[in-house]
Length: 311
Image (tube, rainbow, N blue to C red):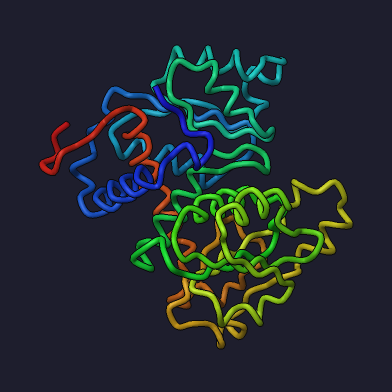
């Protein structure tokens, strides 16, 4: 039995295989529509979510399986004081695979240590979000044709953004990646990621507070929101939330084939006048999230189809 807690749990070869399966699902959805019949996914979401939870549910339904679970801690026995370990032990009796989101870093890892079925980390605090990273990688590869040799800019909240941390970790294993880190000083990327991930893998990077000067250099722009729920001070959040707003006017000097991504939800960091720009791919990113989660569920359940659609 295998779980996915950190994107590094997957080798680059395994990621490529998952992306290939996702591409095939996009082309041949009927081939996969019954592969999880009789299987159940439990979505244990101790923290609010729309896209991730519904994406997992849609993925399982489109594979022919079923879903059970809860969408907030208050509707679970956690409100009575039950531990993550015990909740997981119990749910393992009902489901074949678990997707867990939790506000505390490390909770899905604890769950995987006590579960009798695979556990997928659907986001733990400001730590990891590996399935969003897989969705990001699929979107980038479908737009750029490769995960090698491009320049990506991460803009906004790089301190608390688990999607940023996970994607940088994944891209650090690729060839020819250059990274721009665009944020206010208060929201810089944590030093341990720069040291243990980027410097360790000899990734070239530029740190700046200026989005507009970096834009012409980028092949991919990864925008993020300033996350109110990660701040201890309302005043600090209000001061920083509008630090970077991407508008159609600012994109005039960007590359014609720029790929604009955002893990969503957005607040106001991408103006709606950007939505009609062909370089905006954040809603494609949402769709890619469903397909890659379909591929991942199959992988962790040990379901592999040959070219004819047989197991």
